[in-house]
Structure formats: C-alpha cells, structure tokens
Image 1 (tube, helix red, strand yellow):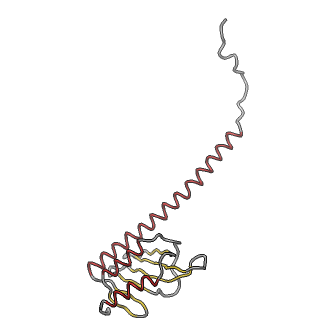
Image 2 (cartoon, helix red, strand yellow):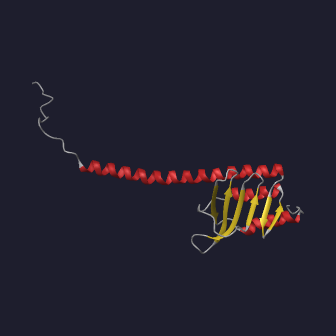
Image 3 (cartoon, rainbow, N blue to C red):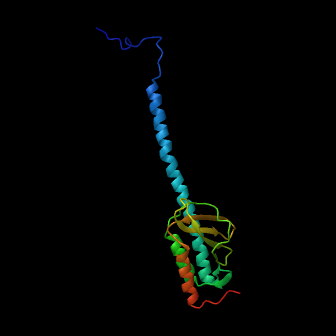
Length: 175
C-alpha cells in the first residue's frame, strides 16, 4: 500500500484570501500607530524641554561667571547677582512645561538679560482652561532662537520674591 502524498492536493484550485487575516493585520497596524504616535510626541516634547534647559543653564553659568545678569522690570534695569540667576534657573528646571506656544503681545513683566545675548522673559498669563493663572517663559538664546511655554506650577510672584530678595542685598542699578 503506497501512499500518495499529493493525493489531497487538488490541481487547479485557487487559494482564496481570508478576510479575517486582513482585518487582523489592519487592527495590528492601527494599534501600532496609536501606540507609537504618543510615544514619539512625548519624546519630542521632552527633548525640546531638555534643549531649552541646557541653553538656559549655559546662559546662567555665563552670567554667574561674568557677573553680567541684569533684570528689567517696572521700567527699571538693575544688576542682579549670579545667585539670583541660579535660583531662578532652579525654579524653571524644577518644573515640567505646560503648553508650548508663542509669547503674549504685551511687554513682559520681567526680562532677564544674561550678558551673552540671551534673555528670559516672564509673563503671568491665563492658562488654557481660563480658570487659573501661571507663568509663561520665553527664552531667546545667543543665536536668536526662541522658545517658550507656560506652567501652572510657577507664578510671577515666586520669581519676584527672588528678585526682591536680591535687590535688598544692595545690588547697584545697571547703567
């Protein structure tokens, strides 16, 4: 009794594609896209924040070493200590950014000039939901590239406390 291995194979039959396989493949692709898009967006968001902090850190270090930090607020320009610059940097670095956006139209409440061509401008702003306020930061690096975001975790009053404390230590007015 010899077995024919090809006896069950029908010649001339066409292989029909199963629609369930295509549906499963589409479902897997849709799940992959919906998983990857938020991950890639989050990575871009964090890298953008990290880049801003690195540049702000360099400017803060420069202002500390060169004693070149000046503060513009209430129509007055004053020198500020390097310690003041580091305290403001620590506040900014200790929070996560809210919404990345363009700066408000009005003049900033506080402008920090680091002496290397970079500035950090600060506004008290209404946040997206309109029911709360926060701080908006707009940093311009020495090459002129700007970026900014708001944060509900910081308020202008916290920055002004640092600036007022620094002014009480007797920093002279800037020329």
